[in-house]
Length: 438
Image 1 (tube, rainbow, N blue to C red):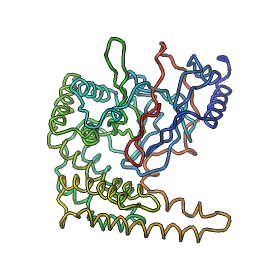
Image 2: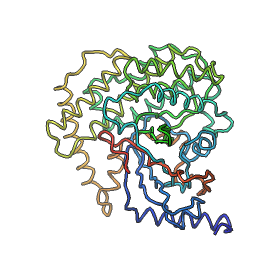
Image 3: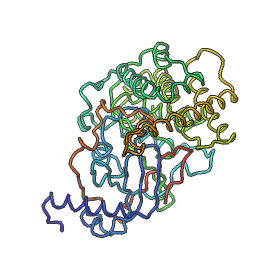
Image 4: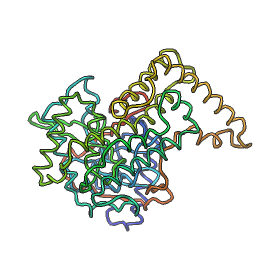
């Protein structure tokens, strides 16, 4: 089978993988961005991919359209092609079929599965700081080429403003037809993003690098090693960007929910790792620019956090359901207020509950009306598809969808050893975090 022509082998990989996925009966982890089936490859597919035993598990990964908080400039498989060759223990993309992909599996547990409130100790923080330094060491010329109008070089101001423009146009304005009344009712200023940019200094020019942008507890897998040690593996590379590395640190600090002392220590370890790797230039302007990027993280996250809280409500929400969603909204607003003073008094919990209840009632009526006015033969599905789905995927910002996707690729796993299986990527569902899946 290893002597098959490339085209024939590629067709077989697709056929066996598709058949395996359609018969999937293993664990399924569904989150904001993907649906992952975790199951053994089976002997024919494992042989084609050079993976040895058919019992080797993989994740069959199907993307979902969802609320996006950053522009997607690459396919995940493109990033993994580069990163998995340079960073140890990064899960490989075994095949990319355009509409979905096949990824290696990492054994272990996600940090999010550890008991709530479990601190991240210094050795783990040091390992994460070293990860960021290794990421920054990947040469820009090794990365896929971003869109021609994407900021380049060291223009951190252009990078920050590009992120802000995406948030305003593709997350805020694109979702106003459905969520605008809710945004207004909970007290989000209409000019939130531009107001933020007017209040912060421009970041210093800083050499760009590869950013993961989503290093949080659910995307960090801990694998035990012989002798009592452990290995940390960072998963979920679909939101990777090319830009100011301080943005990567900021998203990490915000999403890990460190306490103040942990945040201070992680920042110090990050700076030390950059200096030790010969990249002291990346630490210039660290304190003021990190504050700017942290502020932006909290400001831009208000929109998706409010939408997710609203969409988490069931068809007939109870007072407890509304209270939980109101708490999520209030938390997002409070974090944004710490970075940017907002006009007026903060909404209390009762006001937020009323706003969510009113939006939920009006939204259900809108969806029902859209279904009634659907064209015959559609059954309401097509007419309501866009109305039911929050917007935010920037289709003009370098994203390659199925019609423009590269031809399917297959790779032979060359790393020896019996422990080359990869863990199913933990992802965030709408309500909290699901278990790691296996």
